[in-house]
Image (tube, rainbow, N blue to C red; front, side):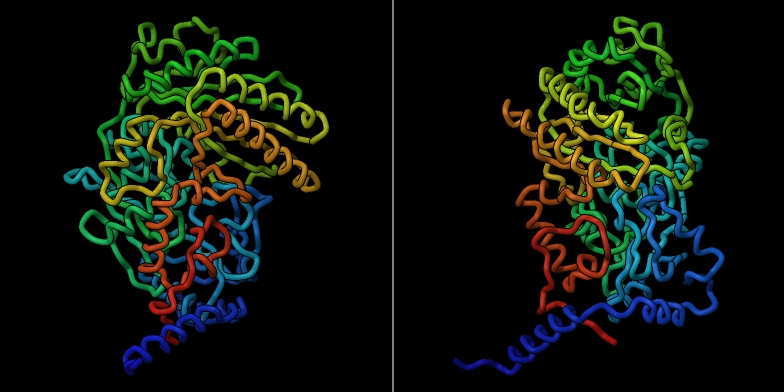
Length: 516
């Protein structure tokens, strides 16, 4: 068989690409020195000895804070482009931080490389003619709400204003407006993305549509998104707030909750609810149902979908449901620390089920029973369980948004998640075992009645979980193909520490190129 010279060259260059991609990472201090040389005198590279290092390195959760070799704080997409090209060419380990609002250690920092802090990518530019707002990836949602609320418009953003824009949108994003407008990610009309080779591309309905779809749930696997252009909606006055129930009335909540999920959320998509069950040290368990209606409401005669929660048929206490102005009002109420580092330790875990009233009761009982032994033995132990419905509007928006997200949800389901908190590092392993045991029992109970859905919401995932695998084989194929096209050297799968990676993604030796 005759093998052409061009084929030999292609193969040899592919092998070179494979070889280059498999080189060991460069010493992180050398990487920081190279970065400092490239941005010399611009104040964008912060070494550990710099007085601003500690402030830039603060993590939402103190227990998850690491010590990067240096911190890079870009101000433009071009800055990011230069840095990422350098990281790729010299094989520098790096981490990416937006809001760092996740407890998983190492997901937004590193002990052995460069931390890219997006904090100074803080543009917010509203276009009232196009009904869009361009939001820099370093913003927290509180900044976005502060900018838009006075204008009487809203975006499909986070329900806690302290959450970072970037991670929230790249994981899918559930909003108080999602029952009306779907996933937050499906309300992005354009992503500005820096790829591994330093190219800056714009993914929208006209170009890079495949990348656009994969960014709707695919996390940080394709590049660093430097800005998001979001749809805006004319929502200002609305009714919102938490409704609280003590333990004796919690059993009465499951029937109306099931009825709402089965029919109410589709009949009136203006309403959104977060059913939370809470257990704090030394206190009886209770429920807090966080409610939101996109219009002002006569609370003495509320819409039918709201009545079970406000008509007094199930007695509540400290009912804070009121008419408000500015969609950021309730998210800012829940923001709490305003970006300060919290002192306790935390883990999350997530699964999903199909709606079933008896299953809801079973899950709640399991949560109480499995938690009980730790309430006295683990200092600072507190625990919450949420059951959040994902209705048909999410699926409709997925089917109509350009690019189609990769989440793989084809029928309504309920996201079941737990957040736990405790005081001491010595209890970390015990708490991890507790969550694994709790969710093994929840999934077994759901599977036993044919109600295990399988989807895992990435933004609530534990460090031990693999939520991208739950998106289904068709979407995994899409993600791998986009990976080959946009990150053929798998820079964001190998050099970026932490985060959920695409299963089965690898270096494409025929496309991977480095240039020194």
